[in-house]
Length: 341
Ligand SMILES: NC(=O)c1ccc[n+]([C@@H]2O[C@H](COP(=O)([O-])OP(=O)(O)OC[C@H]3O[C@@H](n4cnc5c(N)ncnc54)[C@H](OP(=O)(O)O)[C@@H]3O)[C@@H](O)[C@H]2O)c1
Image (cartoon, rainbow, N blue to C red; front, side, top):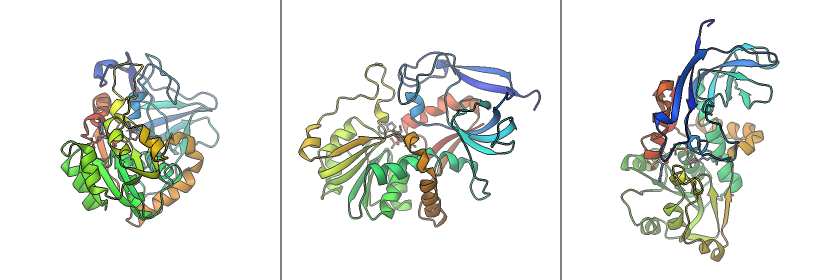
């Protein structure tokens, strides 16, 4: 360990469109050591999230702007390997924003959570079902969506990490669930394996509003938005009175090159929100981590009883992180996308 090297991906320029490997610089330096009140974490698995691309916008978002030259921000799970920090001894498994690197020094006010040690729970699960992904699905559907039994729930990005959990929770709560996804295989998985009532392959079934109307004859009560743009425009035309739109994400706009237009598609049919008295609300899971205990207890219980399935898509090697991030935008990830370091 004494001579260990810290491999890092640093940001060298703001991407235009899809991020390219040349927007980053690979650096290697000696493993850092923790100072007073600090701990040293060895990062084992890195979470790749659509929001990584949002963090590469040249502006503040829900988190402060990164700077050129910074180690790319990223959520990870790992183990404390050296510590001068009370409450975080060496050997503790941890979750936090450790960045695209092998080793991270944790400062007193950094976001880090000590994880329970359970041989039945793989470390990667804390990046998915029992991490920010599970939190997002649970809080978004129950608190923001205020879902009720008997309602129709439509989800875009339905076969992804968040969307696949949202649909299954919707079924557990007694809803009729329709997913929109980008391939035949994904549509089969959510209907045949996860129990969604119907699925639409948006790449084939166009115009989308027609395909949606065919499987939602009673209209849509709750729409879970992961995509934005034309998908939202289609769904808005079919919303029921007092429906809710849970604004979780707008991935179709994350790679827009105009820095003033990031994710800000001009949405048509917006008057439907007034006509149907629809409530449309955005949220960020980070605001709800004080509810983590409640969310993870419920999600863990459903999973143990086989009522909640999820899949992970692991890419080997930190070196592949920049290229792998784009799998989230061409749909080639099949489950929660993770890089094994
Ligand atoms: N608000 C929050 O706190 C929060 C937290 C976590 C995630 N999110 C958001 O939730 C959404 C899903 O994230 P995730 O981590 O679960 O990723 P994911 O769904 O596992 O992966 C992204 C998927 O989005 C679909 N996609 C990409 N570009 C698209 C486009 N232009 N049109 C339609 N579909 C597209 C692809 O699936 P197809 O094959 O179906 O196209 C891709 O597999 C994102 O918008 C993300 O920003 C929000």
